Length: 112
Length: 116
Image 1 (cartoon, chains in turn green, yellow):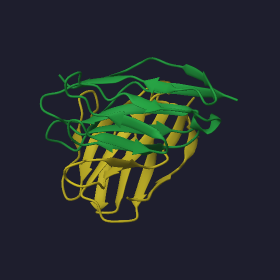
Image 2 (image 1 turned 135 degrees about the vertical axis):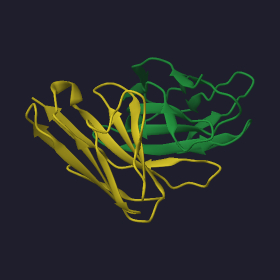
Image 3 (image 1 turned 60 degrees about the horizontal axis):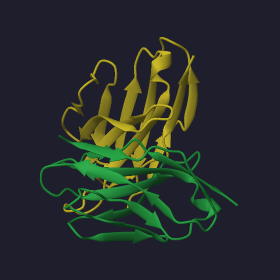
Image 4 (image 1 turned 45 degrees about the horizontal axis):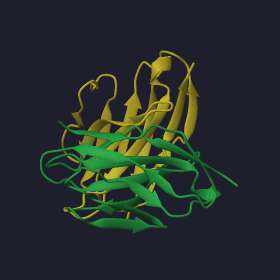
């Protein structure tokens, strides 16, 4: 099938803590994978992407590695900031299509 | 990248009325997509709108409820017809602007509809 599964939130961390948001997917083949971020009151922004196995996407201190063995694309950041508080969506491209399938989203709250 | 503008940004509507949302892109794009984000939920694809052809709807969405226009390569509209409180959502326009390999989408800021 075609699905994306994210860890449930909310995730509450103190500033400078390490962040992991888990994401796994089901697919035939190796679809492009994405992390999008939605800051309060705003639309979705592309955070990072990976287009093939073992690729690492990175942006703004966030990283995610495309792991075909575990069909995962976990989002990590070594030291979160209050400004990282947002909802994070994992997504995969639908097979042979430009459509994206989104996970349920994980709300991150970073406290000072 | 692409800059996407949506109107209205938010609206409060009465049950039984219809509202049309506009999406304007700053460049020509082949594919435009309309998504719905219900309160506290993820994004669900409503339909794909290509210029010069009828929109393609996903399972659970029909043209009578969500008619779409795509008159040119930079503009599209989505109408939410005969609204009920269950239609209260954020409606997002998106375009495919990455390479053919990556398929990334860019999103407008969304139109937040509240139906009373």
